[in-house]
Length: 483
Image 1 (cartoon, one colour):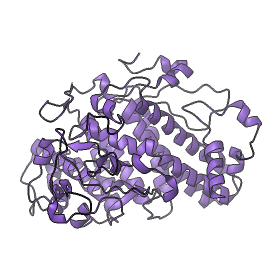
Image 2 (tube, rainbow, N blue to C red; image 1 turned 90 degrees about the vertical axis):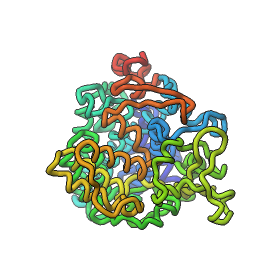
Image 3 (cartoon, rainbow, N blue to C red; image 1 turned 180 degrees about the horizontal axis):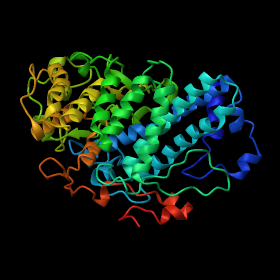
Image 4 (cartoon, rainbow, N blue to C red; image 1 turned 90 degrees about the horizontal axis):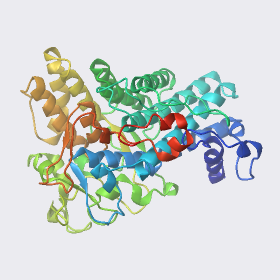
């Protein structure tokens, strides 16, 4: 029965492909194994199932997992091997050679707008449902938070960074389900997309009941996403404020927790994807690509420079110690290369079962957002920045007293700490974009040399051809360099 409901939710509620609406034929006929969108919201039980369907689609491995991995290989500290062992996955992304027909830009757009379409159904159907007012507000808060998170991913892939050009084209904003004869909208400005994201998140913040489940949108998760959004906007007072709120109920994990594989929640997890046995995510899990033992794809490496940036007393350097085999004694762990391309990574524990849970937000990131946001507000905020940075460094074993750096040197120290703490979690590329840092690689560690200045056309994705073919408005709004 659960699978039937899941089919119903995916078929009826998520009938939007890209930005188009449901086909007329679907609206006229309800197949035996599907239910109409209206029926999906007809009872409290079905509404709960519809929300589960929204989470299922939002956690699709080809969306968030894929975007995390793509950000990693574009950022420079991590590379993908040049051989065919991973079936070419992320090789185009690593080289920045995507086209209008490439898989990743097409998948992100299509899946992103399917998630948004499903969330829009809640906005459309919940107000007239039989739920209590409190229940309606709670469901709308949850759906809008997921919608906001999705737009946040999309606008960073397809639009210029907010800190570079908030007036640049972003992505289309779709607030309610489109009818079969409605023309999909064109692109909104980056600033307009961020404003819409903030409006959704602020509604969610005000209306979501107290909740702590890390596998669902919870209060700390909303605050954490707000902190990330404000950081990407360069609104540092608000970024610091929400980072503090998000981490308040999530104490940092122990140093030992940094070496346990990152697929089981610790005290600092705020928000995560729960991959159950029936989700069948398998080898597209993030940990599959980082796995050092050829259990998964095992196709990601770190550069010599990045490994050497960790001091020998830094507990996180042990995340690169790889044993001779998974069951070998810990004493056999050494820094290992396989071939000529970088060092193996043992931060993430990949299993052959689908239960490779993926953390999306944790307190470590919030401390680092707080530290950076405070440091960027000037000398009077540097004490607060150093106080937020110290817990991360202290846990790693690299510092016991506050940093002595000031000004840009302090900001640089915090950004380096972000690299060491958060690599493999999908941050580096977007950090480079929002800080307007050139993306350069030498041939010392990388097999693909690149040199991109801030604002380069190759740093944003093309709108997929399937969308520009279907929507003349978007065809005229294609990102430069992809026409």
